[in-house]
Amino acid sequence: MIWFDKELTTAKLSPLGQHTMGEHLGIEWTEVGADYLQARMPVDDRTRQPYGLLHGGASCVLAETIGSVASAMIVDHEKFYCVGMEINANHLRSARDGYVTGTARPLHLGGTTHVWDIRITNEAGELVCVSRLTVAVRRR
Image (cartoon, rainbow, N blue to C red; front, side):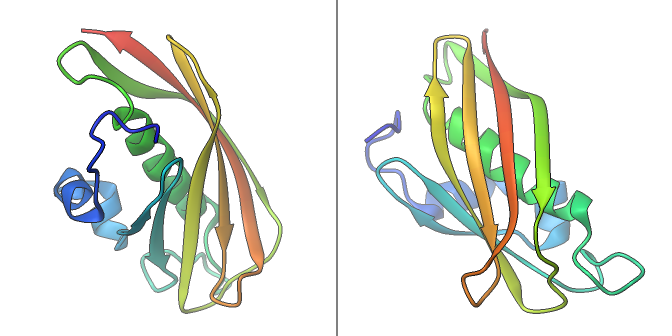
C-alpha cells in the first residue's frame, strides 16, 4: 500500500473536495485501492462543451483532481505539500451523458516529484481519455 494513512477510505477523501472545482463539477470518490485512487464525474451541463460532448478541460479537471489528491495522500502533511506541475491529456472517445470514471496509478513516486497515469473511461468501460500528471512534492 502506497498511502501514508494505511486506512485511507473514500469517506476520508470526500471533505477535501468541499468548496472546490471538483465539487462544482460533481466529482465523487468511488474507490481506494492499494496503489490507485478512483473517482467519477457526471457528463452534464457543467461538464459538456457546446457540441454536447464531454469538455476536454473537464476531463483534465477530473485527472488533475485524482492525481493531485493521490500525491497528497502519499506524503506526511506535516512535512510536505503537493502541487500540480504539468498535465497532458489525449481525448480518445467522446461521452455525451452518464458518468466518466478516472483511475490514477503511479508511474513514479520520487522524493520531489510524482508522475501519475490517469485513465478515464465511460460507463461501458471504454477509454475516453488518457492523461499524465506530474506533481511537485514540496517541503513545508
